[in-house]
Length: 361
Image 1 (cartoon, rainbow, N blue to C red):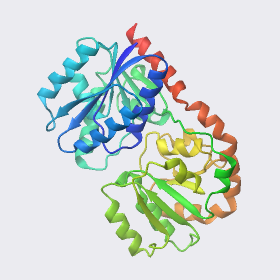
Image 2 (image 1 turned 90 degrees about the vertical axis):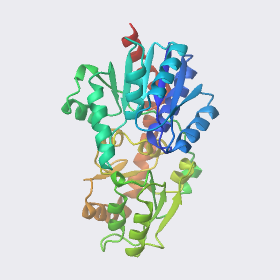
Image 3 (image 1 turned 120 degrees about the vertical axis):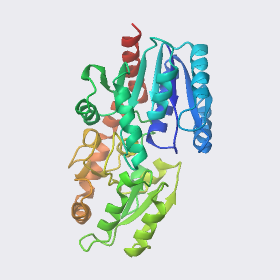
Image 4 (image 1 turned 45 degrees about the horizontal axis):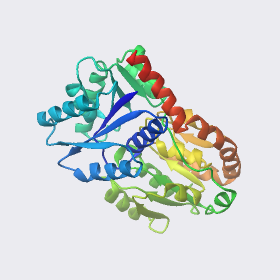
């Protein structure tokens, strides 16, 4: 089967990594694909970084330059690329990729879109995400990354007959015993974009609360629009010696190996890749009960979950963690193989191809 994946990448994050892992898995099963990257003139570095990562994986990739919010020249170039590749299915990722795929696709060519979740962190993004939901009504299939996001799309008016739940893939090596033994005694790890929906300010306030043990330290891997604001908040709360700002990192498995637990205080999520990475590396998860998070952990066994945005609940969680971490680490070790099997890239590819073939037939 031949397929084209279309994406307008942002900073390398969950959706971008899912596309790379998915394309790699499809190629490994012998299927032809073309990865088409929309290179936006206002932030070309995102596309350049993404294309470099794709080429490292030997993924066939080409770029379409986009100027402004809607570039008709880019629509023409994308249609020419699609006609040249002659795919049986077009698969769009993100609202900009979807808009251009919708405008450029040859008539009657099936269109699939993956709903990776919503951030809603600015007014303009909320508008774009609303446009995307409206366009889902015209797509042939909508892939959702978790049961929770599938139900949210049904509530938003997308027909259930169009929806397919396709959980994200993850591919990391099996951790060694030495890795587990090397975890720092009181280190927590946050990995993600430093933007409003990630809720890191909630965790910082919980760390500084009277009930939270002062033994806990926090490593923050990532960057984003809230970085300076949250660094200032950490200083204001007296956390300078307990929070390390690591910036964007490419060694997430190594960071996880040194952490007692992954922390994710998000206000909104689809199916966060970093939670799958932590579970695959057999590291406990402390997270908000949002999106698909409860579907990929075992609460009380491998994870502790709290309501989103609740500083007091996070403070209580940190207070209880010393007495529960041994049980959580044992549970994470026990369930790691199950997570790796359930979210193996080859399983994602088989599920995805089954839905493609359903459309193509």
